[in-house]
Amino acid sequence: MTDRTGAVSRETAETEVDVVLDVDGDGEAVVDTSVGFLDHMLESFASHGLFDLTVECDGDLHVDDHHTVEDVAITLGQAFDEALGDRRGIRRFADRKVPMDESLAEVVVDVSGRPYFAFDGEFSQERAGEFTAVMARHFLRSLATNAGLTVHASVEGENAHHEVEALFKAAARSLDDATRLDERRSDTPSTKGEL
Image (tube, rainbow, N blue to C red; front, side, top):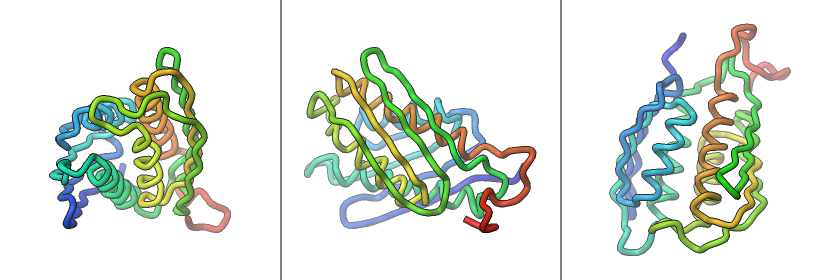
């Protein structure tokens, strides 16, 4: 198996982010964004996707959590893009539904190289801890844009914590499935010959 890892650093006036990703990992995560709920979501994402993930972020949290969440997602997306390379041999398409008590999330992904994001649903509360709930949608959009993914996501429920967590878990499971190598395929999964 080829080494499918990505290491990306991003520095702006608002954040400094370092991400190291191993797509074929064991689900180990070392995460410090100083946003406790985001750390919890990224650890869950790594665990359920079986990705080894290191994330460090120093962001302008005196403003709010927006730049931290967005820039972590951008950098993680770039790490996925780097790790997957030409995407040769992957399954490409996947979808997962994940329940979290009363909440249900679905994420459908095409690792196509063509960024697109669609979302259906609302969050029941404004915040989960210090995490602004609508930033879950923005996280997935930024991840899709920078990893070259088509993502259709939806969520319903009564508790923002459960809604956001179900989304992160569904995204992880779907990405794990879509990025797995198919032993029957040695080429790029496209009739075009490339993605």
